Each structure stands twice: as C-alpha cells, then as structure tokens.
Amino acid sequence: MTVRIRADLDQLPAYVAGRTVAGSLKLASNEVSAGPLPSVTEAIARAAGEVHRYPDMGATRLTDALATRLDVDPARIAVGCGSVGLCEQLVQITCTTEDSVVYPWRSFEAYPIMSHIVGATQIQVPLTAEHALDLDAMAAAITPDTRLVFVCSPNNPTGPAVRRAELERFLDSVRSDVLVVLDEAYREFVTDPDVPDGVELAARYDNVLVLRTFSKAYGLAGLRIGYAIGPAHVAEALRKVCVPFSVNAVGQAAALASLDAQDELRARCAAIASERVRVRDELLALGFEVPETQANFVWLPLGDRAAEFSEHCLTERVVVRAFAGSGVRITIGDTGENDTLLAAAKTFHPAG
Ligand code: PMP
Image: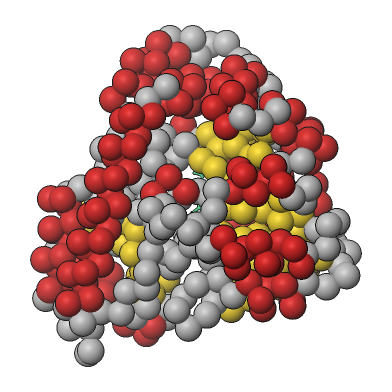
C-alpha cells in the first residue's frame, strides 16, 4: 500500500519556469535585467535584518500606500504572494467543481493549473489570427456556470493588449455575478493610449478586479509581491484564503519603497518600450512574424519550429522561452542583451 493522492493530478499541467543556464543570457521569464529600482536596494537590505520576525500579515503599510497612490479604498485591495498566488486564490474563492472558468488560450499558464486544482470546468477561448484576445468569443463562451473570467492584457505570451472600446463592450455584456479579472502584470510597459487603465475600470464595474505585480517592471520577481484591486467583499475573501504570512516582509518593504521611485520606474519602462520597438522591427526585417506587443516581450509564432529556434539561441548563449509546437517568447532586455539576441536570430532562417 502506498499513500494515495488525487488521481486527477496526473493530468495537471506543469508550470514551466524559464531556464537559467550558467554563462548564458536569460531572456526567458519577462524579468527586467536592471534589477530592483536603484533606490529600493537599501530598503531591501534594511528589511533583511528583521527576518527573524513574522511579516505583517495584512501588508497594512503597503496596502495603504497602494490605496493612496491609486486613489482606492484600502478595503478593495488584497496583497498576495505574487499575482500568481492571487490567481490561485481567485479561483478558490469563486469556483467549486460545479463551476467554470473562461480564459483565453494561449495565455498565462497558471490559469489552467489553478482551475484544475479546484476541479472547475475550463473553457479555453482561442486567440484571434493576430494572436490577440477574442473578447467577442469569450463573451459567447460564458455559460450559466461561469464564475470567473481571466482577461490577460497585455497577453502573456503573445503581447497584444485589449483596447478600451472593445473591453468596455465586453464588460457591458458580462453578467454581473461573474468576476472578470483583468490580469495586468505588464501594465507598466503599455504605451498605446487606447489601452485602458484597469484600476479605473475596476472603479466603474462592480464585477471587475485588476491584478498587478511588482515582479516585472519593478524588478522584484524574487520577492513575490502582487496585488488585486476589486470589490471589497472579493478582496476580503482573497485575504481569508491567503496562506498566512506568505506575503514576505522583505517583499513588502521593497514594494513600499518602489512606490516612491516612480521616476526611476518611468525611465526604465520608457527604455524597455523603445527597445521593444527596435527588436520587433529588426525581427520583422529578418522575416519573422512578430505580433504587435505592449509588454516587455515579443512572441514569435514559429509553430513546429519553436523548439528548434530556442535550441539555436541556446547555442548562441541566449535562453528564450519555447512553447512546444506554438511559439517562442523573448524578453526585451537592455540594448546590449537585445543586440546579442538579434545576432542569434540573424543566423536562423524563419522560412526554414
Ligand atoms: N500574470 C501574468 C500574465 C504573468 O505573466 C505572470 C508571471 N509570468 C503573473 C501573472 C505572475 O507574476 P507574479 O506571480 O510574479 O506576480
């Protein structure tokens, strides 16, 4: 006899983390290569000296600072162990095995994993031919059992963001008892003025919750801090199911200090956005298909040649993220890193 675990976990897809290869440049996890914002490093060192104490379980100071900065009631904010932790909590608080979750596919790989864990039915809605979310198809896919919809904008791993008119039309059509989660992990990199601010939409729609993170633009991926802004009763439920103390103290201190470094953040994001244009233009000129992107990555829909491209990059000491049979996601780095990637791409022939 052996200890029994749930048989259905055999079908649980694995979360695949971007590889780290010694001596190679990692452009595989949408991290910023510049590290934490310069003024935040000191706050991290200070907080590190206090790690024998449990963290503030309610992340009170961070919540209050976010509330002030974003002009929302702190009761509408929940801080989580990364926004992926909040994705899990969102499925937990909305769904049982009787319910369904609607999300675009391909999109963030945590959506199927978290939905599977609670046993919810998964309704995956294919992207458009331009690799963007198909909100009309997503609206049509919602059933009476649907409790949760993920809208990933910009979409990981493909890049396009949803524009205001289309998103508002979608939100107007969704039943008010369905929670719509706008996953804005890459919001800080958006430059298109037609892409709405999710926080503003969450203020106007009673069933909208926006998810953000300190992992990407703020450069704190290793410290695991994400946050949600939505209806107060949803935020309260998120806090209820949070693993106690999973939002760590060093992360809270770093996130708090980061909020005071908005000038540094803006400069960093502007540089990445301009590199994004350059990298995309050069890849297009090399003959690659590259969907429009508003995030800190580009997507190459190489289909069956995705693995071949990533292996080719690896021989050139660049680690990218391949999604077998589908495409390759490449993080935008600094100018030198992007030059290294482009040099590798030049010696690969997209047409075969
Ligand atoms: N949402 C999206 C769309 C993401 O791409 C990611 C990270 N890959 C996350 C959420 C989770 O980020 P974190 O848990 O580091 O906040």
